[in-house]
Image 1 (cartoon, rainbow, N blue to C red):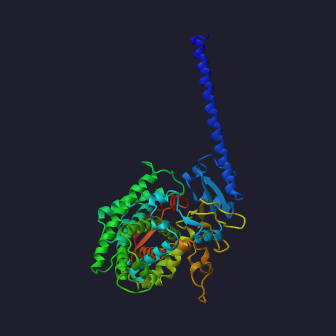
Image 2 (tube, rainbow, N blue to C red; image 1 turned 120 degrees about the vertical axis):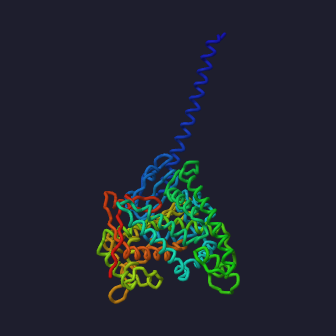
Image 3 (tube, one colour; image 1 turned 90 degrees about the vertical axis):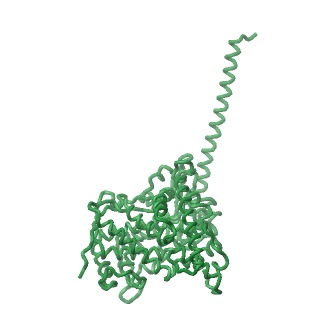
Length: 512
C-alpha cells in the first residue's frame, strides 16, 4: 500500500514529466517554424544576392531603425536585384534603371504601398492606393489643378509667404539649422495654396504641427501595430485632424464657387471645374470625368492630404538642398543672380509671373540638377499583387515589397559624367540648340517617378522651387556653416543633411 508521502512524490514526478513533454513539444514547434521561416525566405530569394539567411522573426529590422544612404547604397551594389527580409516582409530591391522603370509601369503586377504603415497612416481609401481605370480617371479630374491659369493664381500667394519668411530669416542674429524653418515655409505655402483662407490660422498651425507626426511614421519599416504611443498611432490621430479641416474647406469652396466667385486656391479650381463641367459639353478628359461624378468632400480632403505630404516633406528636402548646394557653389549662385536681374529687368520687387519663370532657364537647370544630386525620394515601395516575372531568371513572389530605386538611376556614371558633382550646365541645350546628353537620357530622370503613378504635381514643385530660389537669390545673401554632418544624409521618409543645414541669412544690398 502506497502511503501519502510516496503518493505525493509520484504525482510530482508525473506532473514534472508532463511539463517536460509540453515544453519539448513547444520547442519542437518553435524550431520547426523557424526552420520553415528560413526555408520560405531562401525559396523566395532564389539566386538573388542578399543575406543568405534571415534573423529569426525580425530579419534586418535593426538596420531599418536607423536607415542610412550608405546602407542603401551597399544594397544597390549587391546587384541589379537583391533581397532581404524584415519582420517577415520579403523585400526585393531594384537598383537597375531598367527594372525600376518596369516596376513603375507594371500596374497589373504591383501597386504602390509607399511603406508598410502607409495605408494605416494615410487611410486605405486614399486615392494614392487606387489602380487601373479608376486611378486614371481620378488623375484626369485633377489635371485642372495644374493648368497655367491655376499655377499663375498660386504665385502671389507663394511670393507673399516667401517674403515673410525671408524677413524672419534675415533678422536671425546667429546661425542655426534651417531645415524645420524651411519645412514651415513649405507647410504655410501649401496650406494657403491648397485651401486659401477657408481654414482659420489656428487650425493651420495645428495641422502644420501635427503633420510632422505623419512624416516620421512613414519610415520604410515601422512597428507594425497602431498601438497608443506608437508613431503610427500618433500619425493616424494627426491625419484625422487634418482631414476634418480639409473637408470643411471643400464644403466652403463648393458653396462659394456655386455663386460664381473666382478661384483663389487649388480647391477652388477643382470645385469650380466640377461646377462648370455640369453645364458644358466639352469632351476633354477632365470635363468628362468631372461631369460624370462629383468628388465628395472626403475625397477632396484625401487628395489634399496626399499633396501636403509631398509638398511639406519631399519639397522641403529639395528646398534645403538647393540652398545648401548654391551656398557651396558661389559661382553658380552668381549665375542664378545674373539671370534673375535680367529677367526681372533689375526690379527685384516686381511680382514673379509664369512668363518670367519660363525665362529662368539657368535657375530651372539648377533646380533640376539639385533634385538629381540629392533626390528627395530615393525609392518608392510597391507591393506585388501576383507573381511578377521581372526577368527571365527570376519571378517576384506575390505579396513581396518590391522597391524601384531612384537614386542609382540619377547617379549612373554612364549617363551623368561625374555624377556626384553639382553641374547645372549639363541640362542646358548645346550651342546648336540640340538637347544636352542629360536631357536626352530622360529615362534615367526618375525624380518624379514614372508610369501611371508619376508625380501629378511635378510642374508645381519645380515652379515653386524656381520662384523661391529666384526671389531668395536677389533678396538675400546666405552662408552655409559647414559642420561634420553637413554632407552626411539623414533618411526619414525623404533625405536631409544630418545637421539640418546650418546657415546665416542677411539682406542683400540691391544692385543699382
